[in-house]
Image (cartoon, rainbow, N blue to C red; front, top):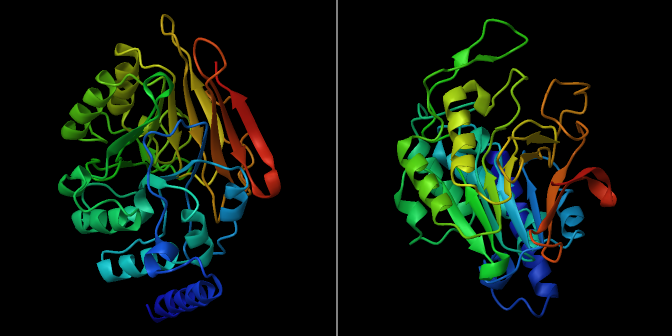
Length: 353
């Protein structure tokens, strides 16, 4: 706790010095405030990422800015809180929020996002976590979500944003796969952590009803659906929607039932990055998933890992994601997903069908 206080204090001093040398920074709000969210903006470049330890070097933010994104989307593990003590969680959020590199980053572009287990408060946790309501409030404070936003008065951090004019709309749906999630089923096999929970829920019924209405009422040309854990992969033994097969199938069926245009799933959690794809007959679009995970630490010894749906390299290096939208591509917008690293390195890129 003392170390966290010292780190936050040092960050404050550095920022205060920067303010003295910057005559345009007239008050604290100018220095610390994130860019406001502009829903009228036509999005062409969106950056995403996850798995960010607040106590490790914050080297990636300038490399992300070099891609000139218009929006940043957190995909979870935005800090590593892992505590039922909300004063500890708050200190860790403050350490991240006021890290000089991240302050400079959020002054350049708006930020939205969801959470995963470590910023929720417990590794691989779900609805059994006793401090989930208090943790939700801290997470929304971290994202500067307005105090009167509807998400502040509901159980769970799920929300949505629709950007752009009618003919160039991107809808970003942020799911909460922690607050209402039932218990996982432990697997005695050390090679696979979990067995399927055949009847359990991830989202909870209220969130499912909300999600369907968000999809039914959408006129967007591109739909980005974000949550902490992978949806499409079925083969690895770690956390994934396939551990709750009824829920995974329900999400896939919902996208197909309402013929959702250009559905792109995005996830984090795994400390690796990859692109996965599902194809269905009689459905205009394949369902793609971009997993991008490892802003400060990654699984650099991943080697190989089974994923029958992978259509990219498997990346174990530090990474972030980019979604590029070409509104002039034809009848439907062209979309390219990229996994990038430092110094403009492209780990993999996939043009979506």
